[in-house]
Image (cartoon, rainbow, N blue to C red; front, side, top):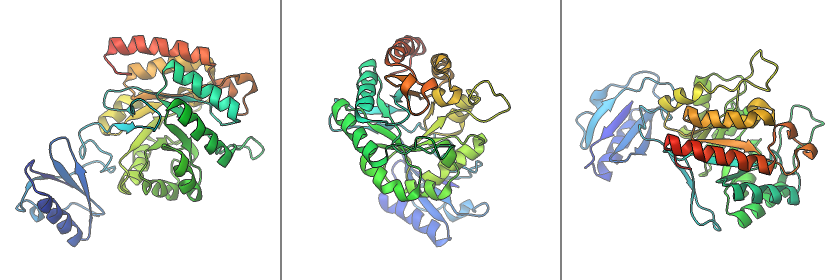
Length: 343
């Protein structure tokens, strides 16, 4: 249930509603809106009687929420969530959501200082607004490159200082959350951990944005319920990432579900970006699918860019060269102008 307060409701009236929710054995979530505040209720096993709240001071309306992902739903929060990050060395904030198309780019893995800084400078020059790079790399094979870990986080921090780009990097274990959060601006939850509920709850306690990738076999509802774990913990700064799902088709790495984009935009207020690199696994497919993501209404893209993909220790075949990324940015800007989307 959602308790909508009048625009003139006082903080004491809002607190009284929250206290009433607790007295009923449920959990209140205060959700400020553009014009008024609302109090969402979770923890109720069934419908809550609106009569508990209808005559309380400051209450405008008590509304039932039909979606199981209550706090991530547009029924609870009709306005788009905008992620905005200002780094110490940037001229202005980097944003995703609310009509702003964000560009996340960089190497799949932090392999070394020179490789990462070269990629960071290139994507910054081409117009990227966030820097991606994995310091911890969960891999299917235990013999594959597993990342540079703490050294990689320090390299990413150096790249942020030089370029001003906020860092997005993956956290793979609950025990690493505090360490990664010390360096990263956005914590990424990868597809293998999309239903690692202990990890989702751990990042919900960190007041930094979380980029949540869709599980490789997750339905849209399971994807949004994973986001609900983070939001329920009090962290409303969640970026969803469509990165393709596992199907019977072997000729692309995954099947990029672009049809999910307008549907998810209708169901949730959280921004959603598309990762065409991990979805297709082929650099020749990345640029057309990135353009398709913009056309489908996504809030951004996440693209692998490597100075020398042939020598990459991780996912070289799907990585764009800096000049290919620059070319992609030129076409995206032209499309954004036609579609009236800000970049």
